[in-house]
Length: 228
Image (cartoon, rainbow, N blue to C red; front, top):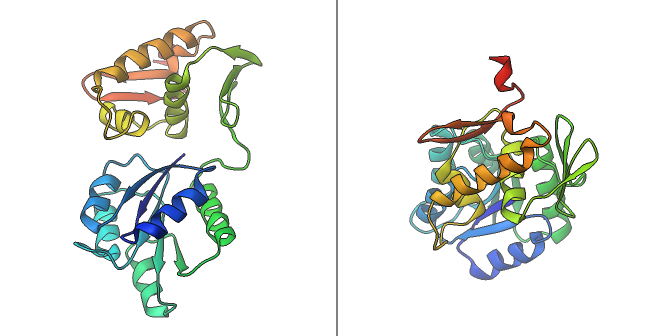
């Protein structure tokens, strides 16, 4: 799963990253404008957002995200334990609040609750789609208990599609999510991996559930081509 930390305190940001590294792959932003830009890509499973930020404060970042229809769960960080701050945060769309300083265990517990509430998987470490099972811990994929041979990026692509089934994922979203913003390759690699993933699923008849939207991206859906 993917976490975005928007926090201008570099030391705290690194501490959060290290604390959550077993649960999430992490991107970091150190001011509000950069954080908003990254969050707008809509590739994250959860966002940790500080209130007091350079360029644009946390309330403005969150308000802009919600106006644009981005529903990624957001945990806000504040140095003050005042009810007014919490009310303002919840009004603009926050999912939870954490007051600094906080304990590592509380942060992890709250993140787990947020992600589970949003439909993600943490403790179980298994994603399912029909008779397909992805074990996120040991990176194995099974259909009817038969192993599917997938390389790392193909596994990541299938995981992303399952987590967002019935939603069109653009090639840019997939690229940013799996290869990263700073990758030296291009978005054409997404087409290559999507094609190879289909080939590996074809033996089981599961290639038909990955729909291509030409020039746009891909979607995993439970309706097959034969369903019309």
